[in-house]
Image (cartoon, rainbow, N blue to C red; front, top):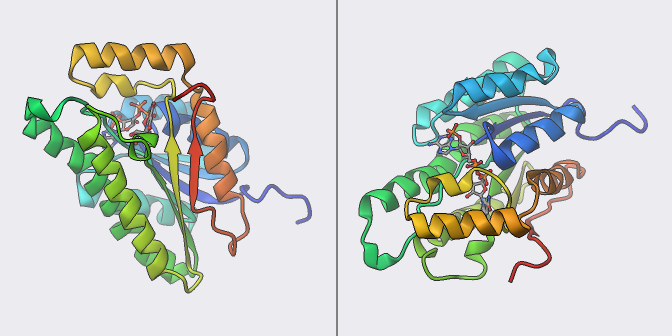
Length: 247
Ligand code: NJP
């Protein structure tokens, strides 16, 4: 149909859809006619968001990305309910930020499980579906923390840059035109992300930055939509979206 929004009708599964960037992305894509499958652990939040979207365009799936089987279920719900999966937005992430001297091995491991293993679980779950369909798009939220390395953010940035590396390999393994990949690097965005920072001083600093100059989550959602709305043959590989005043 002429003039139809290229996002209309797409089936998009989103992890970390219960707040922040994931929620904003779900709302924006649904408003543009996409069918969205929302994944996160907080089902109550997912249900509240879903209740505000057209019922025929939304499904929710309780999803812990550290569990490979949960990603399989998220993808299966998209295929069972909407007939296919066009895009997986792997957006769930935590920020256990702190000095390496803290030696907080438990928090590092938990963060690796979400930020890196969680993305791998999504690739493993969605890639067979994308290949069967002959098309599919992985959009992954990484971070400007991986572009400009800062103290206290080493392990967090490490998880995000590990993901960036995996996505680049996936891109090179997929130059047959079936799979598109996009890495999205946000700077400070006003979300609940500070909630996962354990160190109270760092948490306050990050909250202050977010509240002072952080972007609205919708700014990142619009960048994600830009990558998704491109024709199949056009891959937007990397997008960096930061507040103009962020150093
Ligand atoms: O933060 P927040 P953002 N399984 O806390 C989910 C990156 N980023 O929107 O499970 C499944 O509002 C959690 O859901 P729930 C950041 O690294 C941000 O800012 O219900 N989901 C929630 O929906 C992350 O990758 C900034 O608790 C899990 C979501 O993740 C992405 O942006 C800067 C989960 C987090 O939403 C979205 O974060 C930057 C699990 N095990 C990168 N654990 C920034 N905000 O400034 C967590 O460079 N979630």
